[in-house]
Each structure stands twice: as C-alpha cells, then as structure tokens.
Image (cartoon, rainbow, N blue to C red):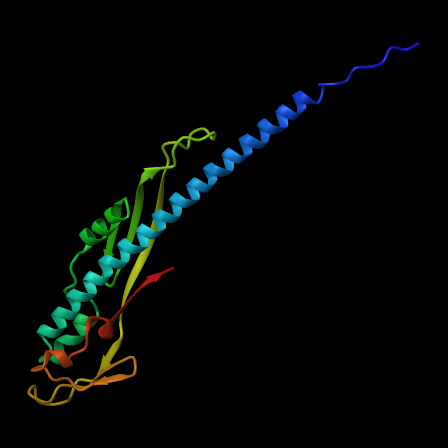
Amino acid sequence: MIPPRHDAGQAFPIYIMVVAGLLFLALAYLTVGQAAVNRSGAQTAADAAALAAAQKTRDQLTDLWVAVVRDPAKWQAIFDGDGAGNFCWRADELAAQNDAQVPHCVPETLAYTVEVRTNKKVGDSVVPGVADVRSTARARAVIEPLCTFELPPGKKDAALPRLTCQGKVWDLKPDDPSRLPKPDDLFDVHLAD
C-alpha cells in the first residue's frame, strides 16, 4: 500500500513570490507616475515662464509704440522688435511660483526659449537611482506682430496712417489714449512647437 501524499502548503511559497513580484511592479509603476507628474509640472512651469517673459516684452513694445505713435516712420522698427528688453527675470519669477528654477533663458528678437528644472525631486522609490532626479522641460514663446500699415507719401505732418490689426482698422487718435490699440491688439504671444 502506498502512503498518501501530503502536498498541503507547497503553493504558499509560490503565492508569496507572486504577491511580492506584483507589489514590486506596483511600486515601480508608482515611481513612473511620480516622474510623469513631476515632468508635467516642469512643462507647465516652462510654458508659464516663457509666456511671462514674452508678455512683458509685448507690453514694453506697446509702450514704445505709444510713445512714438505720432511718428509712423518708427513704427515698423518696434513691430520688428527693436528696443525690446531682456525679461528673463520675469521667467525666473513665474518659474519660482511653480516651484521650479530657470537654468537657461535665451531672449531672441521676438521670442524666448526657457528651460526649467523643478525643485521637487522624484523621491524615494524601488527603482534605484531616481530619488534625486529633477524634471526639466523647455518652452518657446513667440511674440507675433499683428498689424500692418502704409506710410503716407509726402509731408511729415500728414495724418497718421490707418493701422490694420487682424482685420480691425484703427483710425488713430493720439490725443485719446483710450482709443489706441492695447498690447493684445498689436501683438500675439503664443507658445511655439
């Protein structure tokens, strides 16, 4: 007679190994999720920083245009970006508000390219080597002039030319600043790919 076999309990070590493996995978996926959230935060900070610097430049160009509105010969230079300052400090401010810093900001004539690094690290995880990793992202904001005009031939004291900004025609009245175009009428600020 063959004695009965006692197999009870032999599946338990396999069960423990499977559960441990699944737990490890879950923690690894959590780390990937943390990194993705951190990267998304970096991209948001980069977008905001680049747009802030470009909007500040747009506002300055508008102020320059208003200052010379009676001299249309100077308008095109302003629409081309002449006299625009470097507003990377504004990118630094917006990045700081998004818990990040700007290691690189490159002002161009009518654009800013900003690289941002998050202050927050990915943190401890089961994946080795990622605890101290900080996410970085880049964004480029472009300032696009929206207006065209034709200089009047002849005398300098001729009436001001009509300014056409995206289909809207402005008959300029320099004595009434409330009737002059606003910064977003003169320039569009947007992110570029």
